[in-house]
Image (cartoon, rainbow, N blue to C red):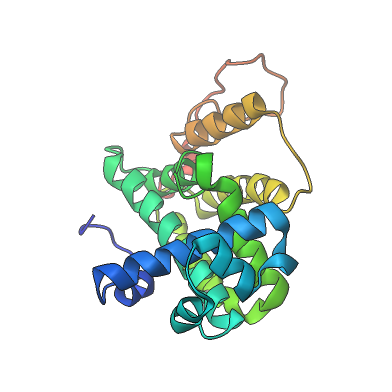
Length: 226
């Protein structure tokens, strides 16, 4: 991961590196915050409820997070760190250089533990809490998005084509994150597989109708300079 040409967010790890007990308690409280938001909604995220859910005293909770803004900021920072880690891992494991960061972005969204599986709703809760109560706290997410976009545009594919893949990926994620739409899991998987294929210049769309699984001719113009 040292070879990656982008900088991962380090705030989360730095703040959590002051001692094992403190770090574990802080994580426990953040886990509890995500559970409350996911289960009961943002308005239920009080320090009394947080202490009860985490199994610690209210004083301990306030020691780690002295206000709701500090708590929400930490939730956002952890979200950013999780996704960056999933993205970096996917890049590191991909041996094909062309479109690698675009593929990693899709992989991190659909397969990364930070986004899907057990923590999916919890992470959605974290980002929703920040957006609802403290809109200015999502600046780390905006900065993360800018870093990702710069890397995606420099990934060897046509920048517009690469951005289309990213936008399709983001649109699906946000639609479900904010309960605007629920897609069939099989369809989501098929979409993810298609986006990854496109990043390899495979199964590209054409103006004509094609059967499922039938590959379109590769358009080399999607690779700048060819």
